[in-house]
Length: 209
Image (tube, rainbow, N blue to C red; front, side, top):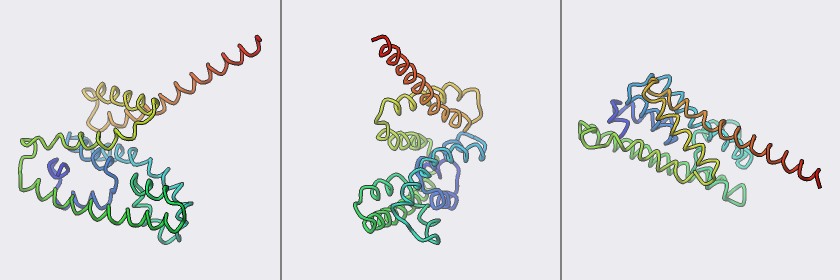
């Protein structure tokens, strides 16, 4: 519904849902396009948000041990939910079953509800008048909030928000999202420097004893 309300047709909305099976990337892409951003910039922001799935895939490839012909299809289903279910299983057989059942059910339901939502948005007409334009950011925050479990993650998220809001008035739509990605390496750098300073301090104190 958010995608269709942003100007995409029902066909384009369904194609996006079929080909980009990760909610955060879809909402980022649609949000940037709705704000008038360049399609390539919007796609780049969506890509960076989906990079985490590649790290899931590195671990799942070892656990699933699928034939080469099946791996490209399975890679399309590597998302937070399928990874969580698969990683919780004790045997390879149950890993494959959990991954497959979760992937099939979510993929079917996700695309079915996308189709229904796109038709609903078309029937409503002006979705902004109903406040549906706020649905994208709200859903994105709902997806993100449960993942922020450590101080490092919260600091990176907070810095990303500051960067994006600060750059939003001066950069084209979609670019602030890319700039916000710099928050993660910045937080890791500061944390590394802090740990290095703490180690040096301990070494000095230890040598003085």
